[in-house]
Every structure is written in structure tokens, then in C-alpha cells.
Length: 271
Figure 1 (cartoon, helix red, strand yellow):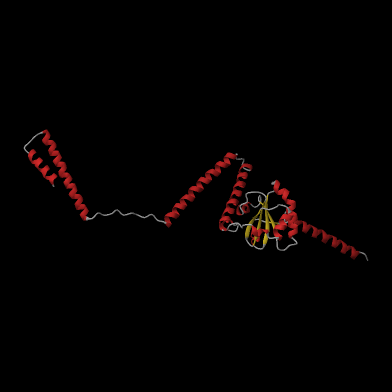
Figure 2 (figure 1 turned 135 degrees about the horizontal axis):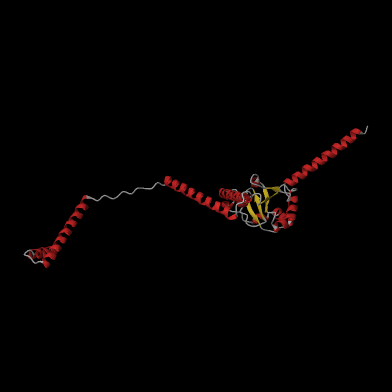
């Protein structure tokens, strides 16, 4: 007669255990900061509505000191639908580090409908709550459009940061699994960089030649008058040379032609 209530109690206890496990899994998925963990796949969520985004690293002492205050702020945000809280571990998502141009840790951004601002006020819970409630973010200049994380150029920067992360992983793999020394790995990357640069340079030159083909300059053709005038000058010069030669011969060997040559020179000078 008491078996059904016992079964119901056992079923309730089992359901409670499963619910507790599920809640723990959700909290673990959200990270230690009790906020949404941003990565390369879901970071566009912050482009709508109002957000506070934290960039941190597990090894950063300042980030560890901020963690309790940020956790309390995230708990407060759960009861205020106007603000959402997110955080990013830069060691896991290096692409977002380049996209947001994170140079110091911890770094906090305020985002309102896709407009980004740096949060540089107090790092305690009360200061952050006051920043949201009193809309102090309106007094801060927004990040320029060309540095905005959702711009095309910042997307390219993010890809370069991803590439650098892959290169670092490859460098570690070459040394750990293949036993290459550090200088050997650097030498491989140096040769690869030179080859890639040469190929890209060749491709760029080919593209420039296709877009702006080289022009062939034609040699100017002289008119007939110019040619005749040039030939006339050359003939006069030839006559002068002959006269000089005759003068030299006359000085060395005086002949009867000397008076004739002198007269010819006098006539040319008068002309």
C-alpha cells in the first residue's frame, strides 16, 4: 500500500538530481563569470540591444581581482532585461582580440545597438551599475567606424590574429612532436615567408600589368624640311673641314692653291 508513494518520492528525487546536474552544466558552459562566453561564432549577438563585454585571461592578476565584482554585476543584470553581460577569454578566442583591438587586460566594452564604447570607469559592481542606470555611456565618445569590430578592416585583422594563433600551434607541434629545435622551426617559417612574399609580389605585378598595361612610345618622325636643313648644315660643316685640311696642307707645303683657299675663307666669313 505504501509502494506507490515511495516510487513517487524516488522519481522526484531522481528528477531533482537531473535538474541539478543540468543547471550545473549550464553554469559551467557560461564560464566562471556567470555571463555569456563570446567566441568567433556568437560574438554578433552583442550587435543588438545593450551589452557589457569583458575581455580577460586566466593568467591575468587584474582579471582575477575583477572577477568577483564582474560576477556580482552579471547576477544583477539577470534581473534587468535592458542589459546583458558577456565575457571573452582571449586565450580561446584570439580572433576577437584583434577584432576589438584589445591591448590591455582586463578590457570592458559597452555596446548599444552596434555602437561600441570603452568602459574606463570604476571596476566595482556599484560603478558599473551606475554606469548603466544613469546612462553615463552617453558622455563617452564611441569608437570610430573604421575601428569598429563589425567593420571590414577589423574582420581582416581578426583573420590575421587567427592565422598567428595557428602559426603558434604549428610551431609548438614542430618542436614537441617532431623534435625540431627552436631555430629550425624559425628557419622553416622564414623560408615560407620569403616564398609566400615572392609569390604574392609576382601576382601583384601581373594584376597591375593587366589593369594598367604598359604604353609603347613612338619615336617622333622628322619632317622633310628638317632633314634638308640638317643635311645642308652637314654639307657646310664638311666644306669647312675640307678647308681646314687644305689650310693645314698649305702651311706644311706651300703651293699655288694657297691664295685661292684664303680668298675662299674670306668670302665665307663675310657671308
